[in-house]
Length: 139
Image (cartoon, rainbow, N blue to C red; front, side, top):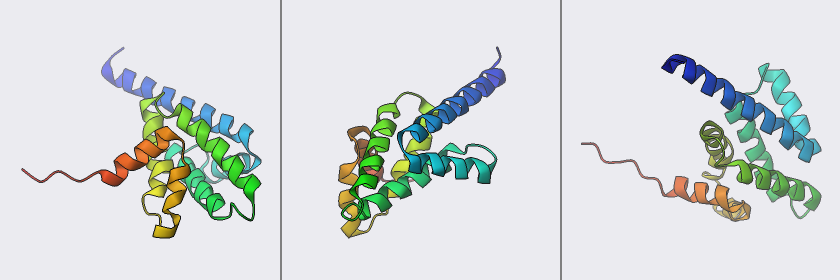
């Protein structure tokens, strides 16, 4: 297999893993299942980074409403645990999770920053890495 064939195989494999994982997440929560259905319908397929960003926004919103709707936040925690458990399994899936899900937490307001403390450790570590990143000086 030449390099371009390997790239295509890797891309197919990563998209297949992402799609399988998205459907697995959908079995954990009716909200995730509905989000996935809407996402697949709107985009004519799975766009992993966008899907994970939708889940990140839902997690943050459910954290904000945790006192009024603790069951929803319990669902969000369970889904985040599953995402955190998968975070280092496939490099391209990691990138979609980091850029999609975790990056949603980097612009939280001061009052919402404690939400990031509720993330499972692998995602919390990635959040801390993102928050501390500084671009290198040119030259």
